[in-house]
Length: 152
Image 1: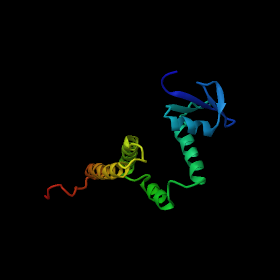
Image 2: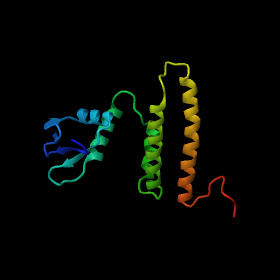
Image 3: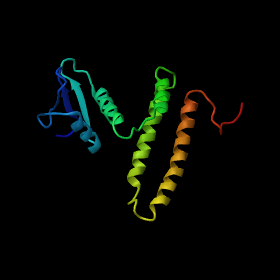
Image 4: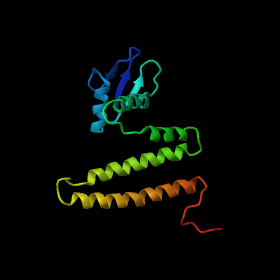
């Protein structure tokens, strides 16, 4: 099957993978995410897209066990962006940042070689340039002046 895989969510809270013709668990959906499989979770009654809610549920389970990715301070800062004028720009900034990070993580060679530290240092410098440029673009779009903009 090509395209987006459809997962149906029934009122009894069960998830049904239409591609595999079987019921699945949140752990199975996590595996799909880890493999990069495109999918959509659809409520069988309303037809609503529940993908985000399911992904958030998986994240909550991940955050509850082991070593959390998000600190309380970070989560509080993120919550403050909801409903504000910068919400859309912040979401794009996070999405772009994660995309760049994932792409560059894939570019790292075997970490057991002597070149790994140099590669990581080079990537960190490159990331700082990219993130600085993205931040300036976001601030300009919000009407703020960047540090390199001419004074009026």
